[in-house]
Image (cartoon, rainbow, N blue to C red; front, side, top):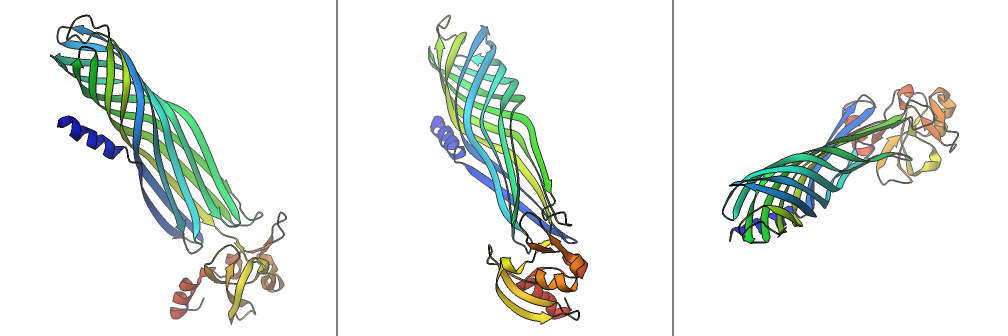
Amino acid sequence: MKLKIVAAFAALLSVPLSSARAQVQIVGSTTVGSTGARASSWLAGAEAGYNWQSGAWVYGLATDISGTNLRSGSATTFGSFSIPANVNANIDWYGTVRGRFGWSSGPTLLYGTGGLAYGRINLNSSLSAAPVSLSAQTSAVKTGWVAGGGIEYLWRPNVILSLDYQYVDLGTVSLVSSAGTFGGSAAASSLSASAHGQFQTVTLGLSWLFYPVASGSWQGAYAGGHLGGAWGNDTNANFAFQPAVVSDIRLKRDIVLVGRLDNGLGLYRYRYLWSDTVYVGVMAQEVALIRPDAIVRDDLDDYLRVDYRRIGLKLMALPEWESASEGKHL
């Protein structure tokens, strides 16, 4: 009955899950945000070791290697520009080399363990401030430490059943990326992300004890496999986007004039070609005639950008503009 309960618990942990969180804030003309996630996943692997025994005390060395899919991920959008951003981290394998020390009573062994851990952490993050995308990725094999314990049962002279817990810390990987996104204007995008390769595992194992020195003895070499679940791998990212807005009429559709400013600039409702979000803003070709100092031309694509701060305006999504228009002038 106890083994059935343990097996059900391990099966529950083996289902890949990722819980995410996100936060957005507007600081001046810059949209900043943060997001993060942690995950749980299956775990399977092989192990081997050697036990020595002195009376009821059992000590030895053990090593194991396991595959998993401990993937933490979060995707979100930021601000009135609906800027997509995401972060993902994955631990796909890890291994340990450990010492073990325990106390046996007949066929039952209680033990603690600790030592070296190693494994690979993959991390990637992106920010898509159309029409320019910013992304970064890194992958590293890290070393750290492991500690834990468990219980083993000598089911037959050569067969060991085990329930094992490990706390693993592989350290942290991180990345940063930034760019002036629009031809040297005030616009900029940046991202930073980190993944802490810290996780916990619970596994059920089955091993074969080779040539025990006596019936009921734990001494000798053993090898076997294990199956269970893992949870952890905390992942976090921070994003920032300061726009110099692409306002070229050639990149817009569904354009409707909604008003005109005192200096002659028109305010228009429109959608970008790549988005269904409705914005209220200006047309770069008109701004180039009235305020040419607010125009930035990118030599790579020849599209016109508007630095809205120079003309004292803010590009808004339609709901935000309607709300602002009710209480004050734009």
